[in-house]
Every structure is written in C-alpha cells, then in structure tokens.
Image 1 (cartoon, rainbow, N blue to C red):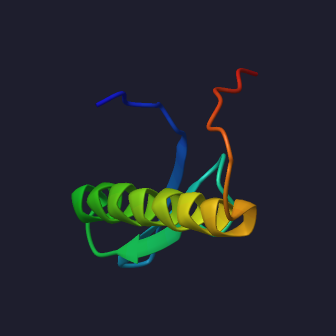
Image 2: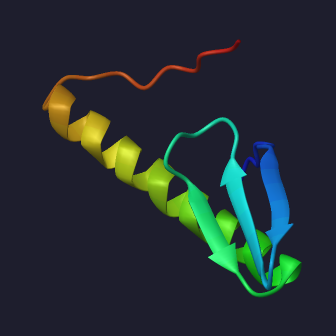
Length: 71
C-alpha cells in the first residue's frame, strides 16, 4: 500500500486538542489527547478519501480510467 503524506494542523484549546488536515477541506477532529487526535485525523482522512473516490467513480459511471496526477 502506498502512503501519502498529509499535513495536520493541530492546537490545544482548553482541555481539547483540535486539528485539521491542511490539504483536504472538511477533515477535522477534536479529542482529549494529541495521540487520540492524530489517530482520529488519520481515520477521518481515510474515510474522506474513500468517500471522494467512490463519489468520483459513481459520477464517471462507466468506461473510466484512473490516472495518476502529480503536482
């Protein structure tokens, strides 16, 4: 499995850690510890990427190609 690096923006606010994935809008979490936050961000990011993948495939319907894009 190929891993891709993403950037988590995290901060402690009162008793909570909050974080966002910089590259993917809508991926954000809140947890009591930094360790829990990082785990939640990873899970939420995986779910968001899979949801976006399935959404794109459904929109393409049939006869589509999957091609790498580099930036």
